[in-house]
Image (tube, rainbow, N blue to C red):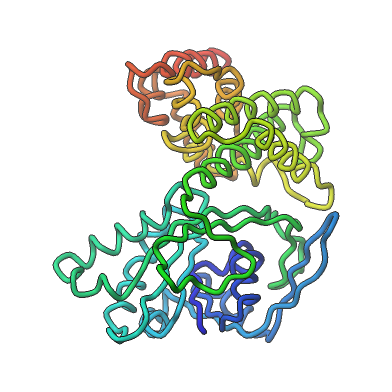
Length: 382
């Protein structure tokens, strides 16, 4: 069995690639970072270090890497002969992966079993985004290729912090992970992934993860940055910040219970598990890494505005989520391009223009006025 994984970074090696290896797949990484590709090809194994309670080391073997910028045909050939394709590149990069997957599908033997494609990104239905890109590029040829591939959405969760200096291609991660995959697209032949679990309906898992892990992580980062605290674990040790995070997550849990019928007690236990993960002192995670790309995180269907909008539509409380949005607006990091753009836009645009452009909310939406007022308050403080 062979898997092609797009994105040889820390998540690719320390999470998705690790589980593919444990599932028995020959692993081919594809990446545009030439130095990283060379570093991977210079070793015959790397170690994933899970730090904290229940952690341990796992050695990964049986892999190689291809520079997709320099050798796209080689990547396409690997895709053509693969059983599984996965990604961990970021949702905005999927459009660059799509032509390579399509080229592989064109070369694939029509008699082969369908290629199984799963985008493992921090976004809702990311595999659908990749599929739509592929279908759009294929155009009139798509009906001839559609039977050669199946697409399944996934929900992935593992904290992979910035890596220590001199780690090479080894990766430090937390012990906890979750990889939920929708089962129906595979019919009778799901991929062999012992570390994953297959579910009939992925939507509750995606939103539980995005609106708890991602919302909570970013909320911690933005309030931590405001307080001048460097590490995520230290930020949650601050009682005021912990209270802000708890309030925001209680609101997202109320939405998940109302929308998906999830049990309130189980959601409370899930929140506690997530917050304990963030408090892991063995993870050198910083508020600056977690808080980067604030414009994306403030967009319409992301971790703040997404759940807050749906909660407001149902008449549920959004005070904690709106407060988190306010903290995100204050995120000011000269080394993060989106943070620079965020602060520039706050200076150049009025509150209505900023709210409409960044959050995608319509003026008639029940959340709009709360967010606009929060934007105006931030602008007044500048």
